[in-house]
Each structure stands twice: as C-alpha cells, then as structure tokens.
Amino acid sequence: MKSSDLSEFEIEEDSFKLRISRRKEDQTNILTTGLSPPFAAPHHASPLPVPQETTDGKISSVSESEPTGDFITSPMVGTFYLAPSPESSPFVEKGTEVNNESVVCIIEAMKVMNEIQAEMSGEILEVLIENGQSVEFGQPLFKIRKS
Image (cartoon, rainbow, N blue to C red):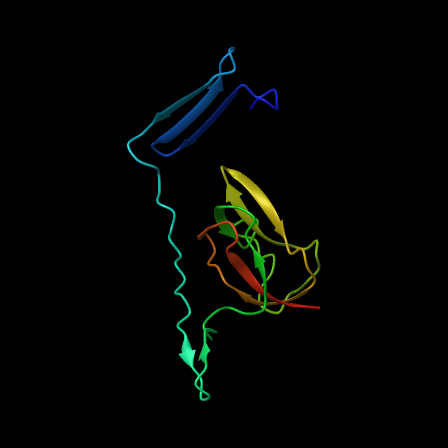
C-alpha cells in the first residue's frame, strides 16, 4: 500500500469481510469479521510416484499416472467458465485450433470476469475442468497439442 496511493482495501464474500486501511502514521489496521472463511479451498493432493523395480533390478520412480504433454493452466484462483454467458457457445472445445491470443475461457475472481488466453498455438485435446468449477493457481485447464 505504501508504493501506491491506495489507503483502503475491502473484500466481502458471503459471511467473511476483510478491510485493510492505512493510517496517517503509515501503520496498517486490519479488521476482519465473520466466523469462518466462506469456503475451504479444495485440496488436490497428488499421490507420490511409487518406485518400481525394473527387470534389471534397478528402481524406477516414474509414474505412468502423471499427466504428460502441454497444458493451459490457470493464472489465478477463481471460478472457471467455458462461455461468456450461459446461453453462449463455449470459447473452445475438443478439437478447436487456437493461437496464442485465443480466449479459451473466463475465470471469475472477486466478481471480475477475466478472459484467459491460450498463450500457445495448437489443438485443444481435452477440457479438464467442468463449467462453474473452482480452480486453483497453476491448475491445468486444457490439454493441448502444440503446433
């Protein structure tokens, strides 16, 4: 807040409210209300690869269940939408060719609709997230074959 002219910031989500304001003495005052956060972030624990013994007696730690290939990932935490509105057709679907500036979805964060671009050229191989599902930063959204 010091590096900008911002003197007050407030977020309100369901029963949770957070307000931060800067005092004239440059001290920060943090005020929170609510009994609990509005939701618990889903925990996506990936199982650790199990070492496998190969035929020559060596131990391999490669897991075949790990995703491979190229992915378009979420740049933020929010709610994933495939189309600009419920009546509209999706931005992309399996088989759609995209370029690095193609909008592939919208992620709603703090009531702001953020258009997400592919940032690479290729063909969408799979949509990995359901419409309306919460997503985490870095979570794969689409599997893509780069061109």
